[in-house]
Image (cartoon, rainbow, N blue to C red; front, side, top):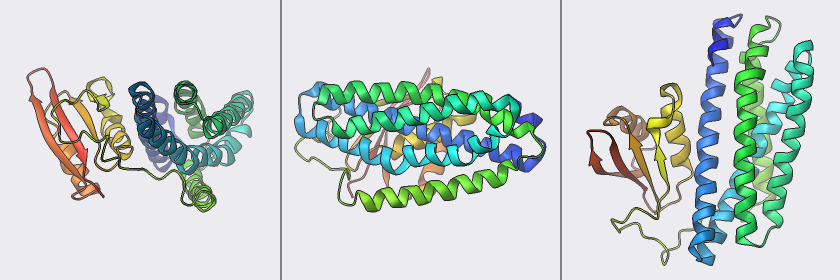
Length: 268
């Protein structure tokens, strides 16, 4: 986000960059969960499709929806006080409502193909929404010296955590990831059943955050195929530091054009 350099303070610039990074993580997690819903729907395996739907729904309730509603209560509130931001905020609030509506439709859907269509709609809408936040809303508030972006970020985090806790309590016992031993193909070398993330296409500034976000969506016993432009040793070290002993890594290809790795989350 180039406009961050125009921030009124260094703290505000850093806060904005942190938010952009967090957005990349959320976007990557959503993308992978939607891919898993698609794989389940097309595989004809009912249990896998149901598990993917529940995982998506649970994550939306405890992460995606709390984040967008917390952003509405903080960033949008601040931007609405800036004349140039009022119409933008009105449009974004409408998008928040649509995001919540789609999540509600996923909850009500009992057809795997309908769920797949809804999941893709959610993914597309959220991608457009993030572009507005990162490229329009954030630069607007960052440039305003009267808006303490670093304080807004802390407020957003607190609000999102509160909403996530409320959602977890309301949905206790529902939507937790299920490891289906019968459907698990973790020990096979055929990786076509696993979602693939091509990190070569991701901007360097958010590459690690995107990978971490995608791996957060991988369920115990499942895996992600990662394509990297070089041997991702620094990323793997950072991953081990974040989640020690959680993932197993197997190199499938070592250059020269790409490094291909199978990253498997160990069974819980």
